[in-house]
Image: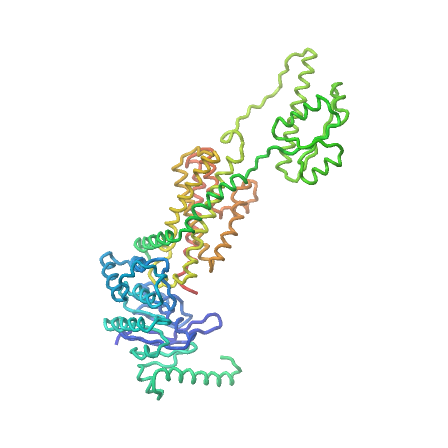
Length: 256
Length: 379
């Protein structure tokens, strides 16, 4: 089994605060890896380190075989990234946004034409290509962002809460696309708060206060915790960790 | 991986052009603001001293004393605004600034003149503005001196000495600005000052805006290089700035009547270098500031040193060495010398190479600093 993402003891501190605490995880190629955890648990920080947006404080990591510390530019050419906040140009049209990123990723004009047609079709953006991105509604914006992230045929797609605040129809379309991409061999790392989405992932990693608490297939996690569904796994894990921290905190005078 | 990719640069240029076109109000401001500023400041920045307000206390009214006063008025440097009597009255006028100088003609003036004795007159000058005071002083001295010589000549002629020849004569010719009008000197400088501050703000916002709107995050996960992004952002604004520059150039030439004596193509090509320098300076501000407000504040903080250190207001030669050196960090310093050289003296590159080189080096320096400051990270 080849891995797309491999990290060992990956740590990120912001001053005194530990955002990600010696995270070790591996994501096999061609799989969908769901990254779960409460808000502020370090999911986005981990993803940003893997994309080369943040430099890890310590630890090692490779993405598609490239070192996150030293080869972030090589990584950037091969990954597609979509952040939880819409970060395309609202004052450009759908087509102009796609054209801009096609140029940035150095697509040839024939590639550009073909990919644009494919992606507009895939995202169901047909007929809206002359519309300003800022005037699109939430779901459409996210589909456009996904299209831009896929323009250059990335080997790895990193999605940070892509479906937050998105209507059920758009969510369904979105996940259909994700599964389709995985079938084509693209690795997907995705964070989400929706357990129905997490259920369909191949692998799940659970992060809380910067620590990776559990990792496995959805079924393994449910069986291991002896609970009914993934939502209960989530709640149970948070409860246990809070109890543990409270105990440790009482013993050590509140210092972690 | 580290090389400059034209395709990526060009995508940024195209994107910026579309964004500039969509943001009509900003574009209008960029084009109209320099024009408005030039109209406004073209009239305000005037260091010529004319019509110095003079109050006269004539204690010896006669044809003789009135002739003297007329000579003051005829130079157009002085303007009689009041006739008063008593030191109290004239001092009050000097105090409240309604008069700049006071001419006091003593009671014995006419009598002494009639007897061809030396007569003293007094001129009180408000010295708080040295520029006005100096003009008043030297003009008054000249007027009295000339009158003395003329009177002396008349007297000697009466005594049968015939024409007298002065032992020395000074022939002067003022070059470049023969009437010594300050507007001729100030308009080129003003054009430079306005262009620097308007164009700097254009790019000072550009990177920060992307940070604020979150579009920067998407941009830095792409393989784009800082230099491609920065130059791509600057390029369209060089066009905007150049258009604006040509507008103010026309206004300076045709409205204010300050023609370009030298080569216009040279002026335009050097102004492109200047615009690039100020735009890169704006980009540098953009890498320092975290919000558009901060960028605005930094850009404004830059205006005063530009006015005071560049030689716009005061000649740089008389500044302490360290201050002169600091002026080298203002692009306007180099461009002022170029502007004034081409505008007023009509000189070519041979006389301007030092300033051109200086500006080029500064441009490169600030570009490198901006590139080092700009990291493709979001910390």
